[in-house]
Image (tube, rainbow, N blue to C red; front, side, top):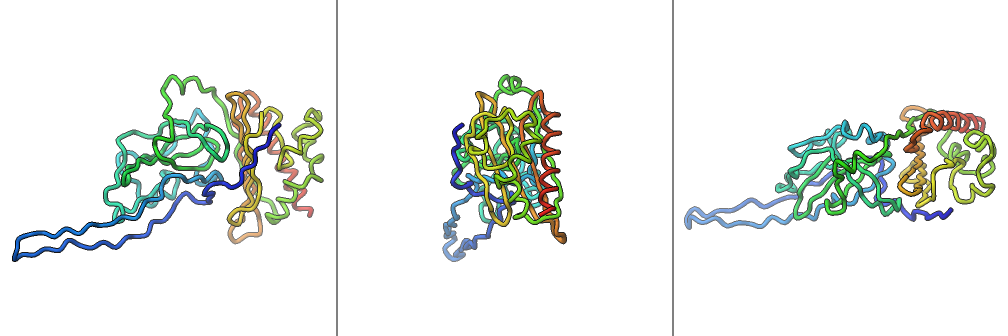
Length: 304
């Protein structure tokens, strides 16, 4: 199985809100004696709204099962306010004093589309929740079905027709969090050190059906047997949190695993956040496996 490692997660971030600084402008001046108006050109800084990739923003934009994609919150007919760009309703907040000509595009959200993700090396399904015109660009903000968010220029996404959407089979993501009384580093050791491979493998591969060298192509002590070929994998510390993402594909089936460790405020506990899937007929089985696997990770981490 070929493993193409992600060198960097482009613009990986832990929040979907990016603050905009204001740009000072010069007012128009006039001469009443000559009854003429002298216009001053206002220079705008280039915007930076297209090209975000925040796959770890699992709390702001949690995973969405394909059957629920139309129910995600959106703002239509206007630009969102700052609070809406922070609470998961929208993604991009535009300072209209800085960009007075910015406006929403004439389309109704949400919309299902595909976007080629250079980091995961997959043409992924996305839910477009925002579309704006700013300067000379048309920008869309979207959320990944497997959690997290991103943005792109509108010509980089392909909106799906109804008949295409109808052909997408029903599936579910396993998504949950667990509190562990151990540090991120201690938990990461359990997740990634090969010496824990056999202990954890016994949970998700009780019949020992995986190839003997499966761990050589994986960055974590977990593997879904039906995941397909690894297209990209990343695991490490980023912005004060440990995060791992494994992307796979088998024919039209796109599978992903996300494991995020975060610290809880005013507590020594660490949050282990897991999103895996999508799963089809074996969803309940895999949910049970992942819950037991996470429980064993907790047990081993708290013993260290």
